[in-house]
Length: 225
Image (cartoon, rainbow, N blue to C red):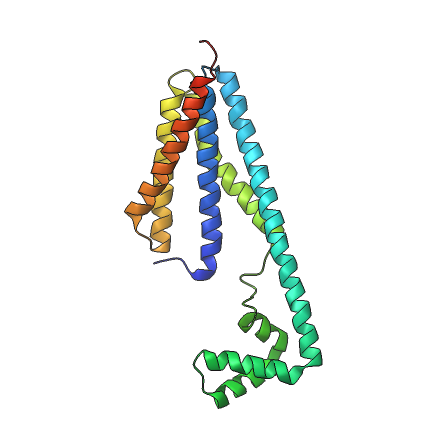
């Protein structure tokens, strides 16, 4: 069964974070390994990539979601003021919303009146502004979730890179990363009801391209073996 709409935002963020963690860390390790760097350099690069990527994801998500939170707070403040100064106008506005959704004018008015009596601000926040407790912006939670998903994704290529540093890290890390991305893409598609084949092909193609480019750059600017 496809994921609920209220869960799709978190699912999307988690999948994107894990994808970024796998691709970014794997590409970094592959690029460094292709330059004929030793195992210590590969380990340092991988760890630095995971830490920096997780912090970058957390910072970006925090700033983005905090901005959204500020906008929501400003909208609620404005709505409170309008309810206080023009209650009848706000009631007509809420009634109009329900009429557009298919209710007859008389019923729409009754619904608007009852919801206004129960919690006017909540009714307008939900039906006029499209806000609810389920979708309310939570900056710190979003930042921590993004950092954790990136780090969990980056842990796989980092571990493989360390274990394969003395063998063929470029090929092994690339293959393991693409396999993990294909599985993640298939799971995500299954949860959201999207076509599995297209999702897997899309993520593996672009990830393979990223790995190939970074391997090429590493080889181009590599050091002598």
